[in-house]
Length: 473
Image (cartoon, rainbow, N blue to C red; front, top):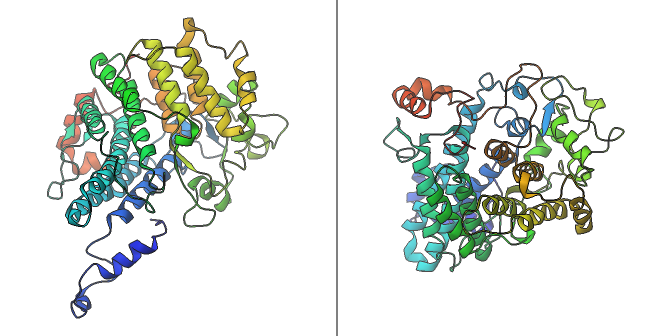
């Protein structure tokens, strides 16, 4: 597993923290320290989360296929939704539980063990940062699988955790974010914070924006909780500009590069082209983001047939911007926040109003982020196929939200499942419909069989077409 650069201070802590007794150190393994600084664990977990969200390695993450942003040139199992051959659900599951949640749990315990060295405000702030990433990761798992091990998942003495109800997990996550809103006043992790560099005001906005995301999922399935979550988020303060975007900082040299660069450029492979699904929509609207998302390597923009062989030289590639080694990973951005507010306003939830303004703000934020030119957004919004119309808001918001989530593909998948827009293609080779969830890992079936069976039965069957609890629109 690739490790992020350890800050000098953390390195010194690793060297000196074990014991003041020089003779006692002779009995310690320097490659396996008993105590790892909380900041290092926090950095490592955040990087693992960002890598898993961003990468397009078919062994671990096919969200860019499922959302039909990309398709394959030759190896077609994944864009035809074959998940088991490469054990994709297991790899996704393991990365989030082991590399993210376990490190975050250890980081939280380490902060609390050393709280006598910190002020209470510093403890609260660091626990709050950890909690935000924990909540993000738990939601990531629920939105991928449905019911999952939660309350017993990280217990060191329980290797057979039960599956918790996904709706109940959501309620607990919402309560956690509401509870920590006042905990961002102190100094949190700073040099180890690879998202905001210790800017706690932005962490607070990220927390409330994530609360908004959770609340929006519950529209139409739990109106009371959705209303409470969205109102709390907007009252306490969500992202208000692209300056607030939760972006993970990658570097321009290995081993800390964006995984897209690793999978496309460093690997030297030509396995991916733009899917005709997104290219056709963007071509119809003359979308200015095409030049940021894609390379101008063919005459015009030509997407490969989704789920069919699509020769690399004949179809549109990812842009240099997307494949730059230091291209930031997007965990959440202002564009997403505005589209979630547009959805809430259109549904009349959470006291949010003026869906048209939020919709326009979302488009403007996305185009400005990718092109740096707000005038392009104004011209784009003036088109009849883009301008807001309350009568068909789901089609408009769904399509524009989905286009804007091109570099945050899990959220693109959410948009399609929740709003039933835009229309996605049937996989050409298999004829399979777009999955509504990942199936559970094979290891769960083999090693945690009783709980797997109970969890599968609770959601209506372990099938790609079993909808998640919030997918009822």
